[in-house]
Amino acid sequence: MTTGAADPRRWWVLALLSGLAFMILLDMTVVNVALPLIQDGLGFSDSGLTWVVNGYVLAAGGLLLLGGRLADVFGRRRLLLIGVVIFAVSSIVCGAAATQGMMIVGRFAQGTAEAISAPASLGLIALLFTDPKERTKALGIWGGLVALGGTLGYVISGVLTDLTTWRWIFFINVPIAVAVLLIVPRLVTESRMVREKGDRLDVAGAATSTAGLVAIVYGLLQAAEHSWGSASVLVPLLAGAGLLVAMIVIERRAKNPLIPLSFFANRTRSVINVTSLFFMAAFISYTFLLTLFEQHILGYSPLQTGLAYLPLGFAIGAGIGLGTALAPSLGVRTVAAAGFIGAGAGLLLTSMVGVDSTYFGGILPGMIVFGLFAGATMPAATNAALHGVTTQDSSLASGVQTTMQQVGGALGLAVLVPLTIRYAMAEIYNGVSPEAAVTSGYAMAFRVGAALMVLGGVLIAVLFERVGPEPRDPTAEIVAAAR
Image (tube, rainbow, N blue to C red; front, side):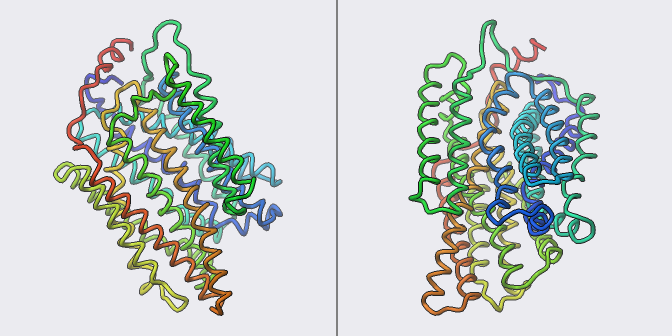
């Protein structure tokens, strides 16, 4: 694979890498509908069960930046294949879990696999598609399948747990991983950044950034069960913040920093990474709370809950196609800003649900609007996150964006779920029936999510640079010659 000419196999590679990304993100959400069955099967307590979800998020969110830099330094194909092997083995561990510890270790390993393979995968796509229009289309396809993986996890989980057993939500990953391991080496050659003799990986920067992110994600997850003023929340958050400050000091002095501070000089990349926090906080909280509303208030079964998300998947797919088609003519800024604001309108529609709402009258309208506009945002946002990125830093850029998404999802759940519960308790104290009070809490959380989306859209509209053709990569010829 060279950077001088387009690789004729690039679309086949894109299909394979997109399928892999779909499978990996699928496993972040696929367990949600099956959690009650996993709890019964392995004897988890309510608090212990949260680690089936949190173990994955904690590992993925904390290790993504390190995974991106390792891919740039040691080879994107190599790190991708290592991540796939870890993912396949950890999926088998989860599916065969006979104890709680076995399941939690497997989920931590799955999150680690995402942190290793996801930045390498997106970095390879950025290198394969050098033409700006082709890159926009390719990133739209990749980002769309990733988003569909997160959404369809609910559908697949409901179907598999209803028709077979919860163990198959993990075992189904193995044949896909084997296919990737067999095909990728045949289609993709190795690529990595050029390193001068004597250069060393920034171990101190890697250690402080990884530990800092792990601590912050852990603190955010603890906030779902403890008050914000408790030591369980404050200690890891403050420790994480201190470690990230130390990382900035280290990066300013390092000869070959893990995250060059000049990376954030590009305003478009910086803004889209910040607004990714808002997007994922609203998106993950929407699907999580809507699942609870459907099962606890409307009485849906796991299968019904899963199937109820099908329109969201179709709407996201349609939005991705629309956003990919419009971005070249309207510009990334316009499409991304409109997508954020439109998705906020969808959440506002959803916030009108009540205890007597029906699926078609109360849930579906907001779901379609939200999915369509959120999908339109995805290719534009991914393109903006890679705007102006050189060959040297392609995997790092994807790692930064994915890290912000993971932290955003954790932050959304950590803030909005406790907020929902406290709001509902206040309503009950005021004499409102429990079902109506809980529904009011869900509606309030949807409105907060809508506000985050609109705020993100405004920031994009005001602060984005004009995203035109990609600048010439000064390292491209050097990398090509090195290979």
